[in-house]
Length: 316
Image (cartoon, rainbow, N blue to C red):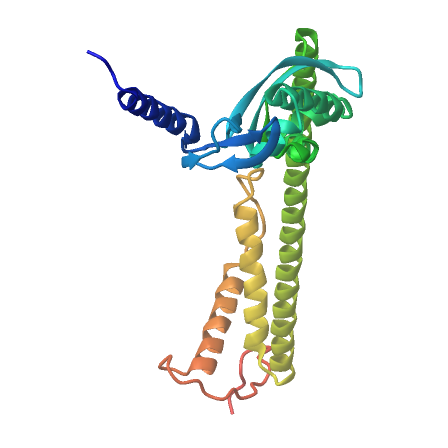
């Protein structure tokens, strides 16, 4: 059986068409960009989806991952400004914004970003003291991100985060820091204790001052009351009311007896005692009360001057 030329040409054409479709149709996955080169020169970028290029003339150059990526920064030693050696590691996050720049502006993109980050970690952290280094991690991260992002911008890279994971000082330095922290806490405890004692003494002194002020005020009020009572008695005496004198003397007399009776040192008191005088003074008190409040004890009546009673009344 002999094949005609047409029978051979058709399968060849079919194979050729399939080959052309295979080399001209390119499928780009989501989150990626492909660069297209024509005779070795960049011409355009293929976005995610189905794309067609010129067969045998164009070819796919670099396949760039456009998603955010993480880069682990290995541990390295950093010498601080005060000559302390610490071991530092970290992590960096970046994203490719321009596929042609990332593909053709730098060779070995990840290695370039890694070295750039490590170099700036040593530069930034080496310009700080150890105490500043340990207490300002957020400031270090922010400064590193700004510097590395600015340096990687010509590569079409956006640095999203640079984080310092661990800062490990040497063991002897950690021990010294622990002793320093303990001494500082003891100092604070002593200061707080002294402040508390000082405040307690101040409050106690203020309490004594307030009590002394109130005692003086009470004595002042008592003296005023005593003066007023003396003035009233004097006025009564001036008006001829001898019972007022008896009241005043009886009051002082009973106060003196109460003080003597309440003394702890004198259980037995021998003193001249004239019962008739005390009864007389008590009688004077009763007369004053009747003069002031009336016989029924409800309505006061005006006091009338009484003649002095120096002896028994003469019969008229």
